[in-house]
Image (cartoon, rainbow, N blue to C red):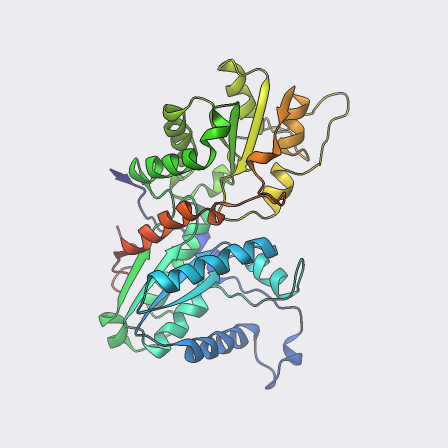
Length: 366
């Protein structure tokens, strides 16, 4: 079993230090002129103090979203965690400042407040939870996963300098790994689950799964390889499975198309589904949207991708028949991974197997 190693990532650490602004000026804050950072910490502190019932806590860390459907999926996941992890207080965090700001601004639905992991961990330290499990809700251990790691490092090393060092030395901090943290165990487990969910479509045509992926410059821990490994594992089950991304070099929809052509899948039905924890902008627009840059043919960018064109439109233009039943429910709604109970079960298994990591003494754990 080979686990992607942790390395010190200066860029990711810098990202974690970036503060984000809210929709109103600091001068509008109740209680005088305080920074957004201070205000957010006060709000999270108040939430934790009000909700603390146990001595142990689980923090679920997702990238985030501004879609109500995604909020519903997150809320369902939190509710299940509370039922299946008695004795733990369960909280949800977003790692994306953009998603946090847009959620506060009620971009697509009613305003909701989400906060970065650093605020939750600081609040946990202030009430002195004896055990904290941080569960990454990412699919691959890539760029966004580094935000989870760096928040844990900073907390354990008392980056604000206001926590009890004796407490930090004695408390237990555990990490629940992303969905595809390990190869081959996690990859094979997810492949089996996906085949349970989409196997009937793979029997009838090409079943395409669209992940996010990271550009080469942000391919933290070289995590993009998990998409290739997952496609191989799925094709061992049924050769009609393909896994592409919106951001991984040489694995865009155009490259999926090339692999299909090479394998003789030159026509017929194509089914799509997002390989992302929630169905947000990428799922609804990049995969299932109606954007189409076709004008007497497509223009490919320097990396071989056709921009401003959804997967649905691209494969239709390439002569395939798109069946939307593969990625929608009975209401015609695109479904993300967290909307499948068997995928949520994989995340919960990672939480049960969370590992204790000694971040207190070293900022560069092996």
